[in-house]
Length: 138
Image 1 (spheres, rainbow, N blue to C red):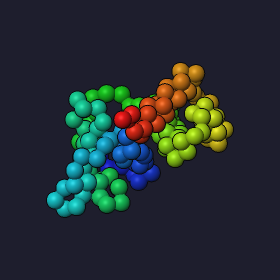
Image 2: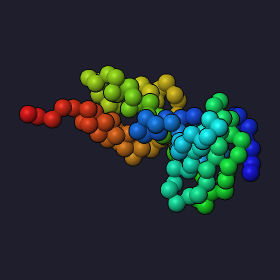
Image 3: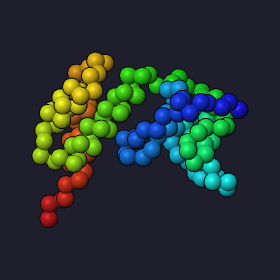
Image 4: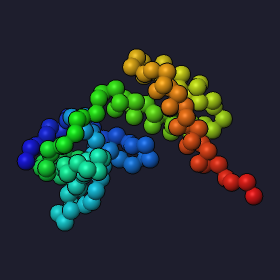
């Protein structure tokens, strides 16, 4: 069992709005609450057998921390955070164009690692999220 420092664990929101715990580039999702009010988190890769245990303050204290895959890159984690923040703002302000929202967010966060394909995928995810919120025609 390995213990991590509190600064190693970062709480994030995933694509579907659920909490993710990022530790040293590995994403974990909430699995269950244990008997002694501790939380168990498992890796987001379903074939990976890694899990961690946390207390109420999300301080990691144990578990199986051996992953059978590589960690996510810093660029992909930044893209996840950026995508979720833009998508949330797009759902709050339904009339704003996706490109304008993306441009505002890029200027505010000052990120240089995005490619044209990343921006296109983020724009597509905004359209999908907005379309899922629309009511069907009668």
